[in-house]
Image 1 (cartoon, rainbow, N blue to C red):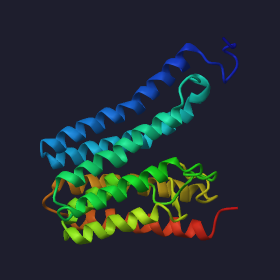
Image 2 (tube, rainbow, N blue to C red):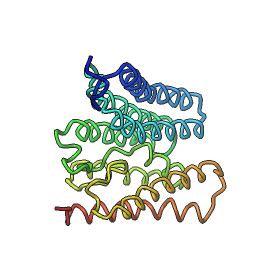
Image 3 (cartoon, rainbow, N blue to C red):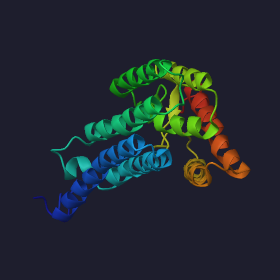
Length: 246
């Protein structure tokens, strides 16, 4: 084992911490399984809460991994592969099952919608440059659990929901660069703006959770914050696609 004076030394504490982070990442799959159980039991709100918990796990595990330099701490585990496996399950398979067993999509046509979701996600997850060198997602980043939340919250016509899903599926193949909320290195050189974007993302999460908490009631301020962030997110993503940071 390397000397403890080396900042990159793989001490037993770092190794244990690395394994703990991998277990934390893998726990997202178990949370997704609980979400499937809730959907099966027709506990829609519980399922949405569990999908939200999976998002939180995914949002912070990468930060923890980078902090401990996990590739050197636990070199025998491919953390990126583990993350992709869990994400495909929680971001695609779980919300797809939700779409199949609820009435958000038209009868029979729901299979078309779910097929579009799963196939476009399979493409998006397996692109060599699905995450660009400047830390953006290339193409719609399979945020299907988030899409499902908004479709459920707004209770729009089933055909409108299907149209939205098909458009998002098509956007998976369009090389627009979408902001990676926890990797803002190339969003702007201004550190204050990066912090502001991170804070806006956290605020969106709190507001969206608030909407789920008060459902089926609503709250105008929470709607404004939640939807306002989506507009900001897509606007900045389009801007950075056309005007990359050099």
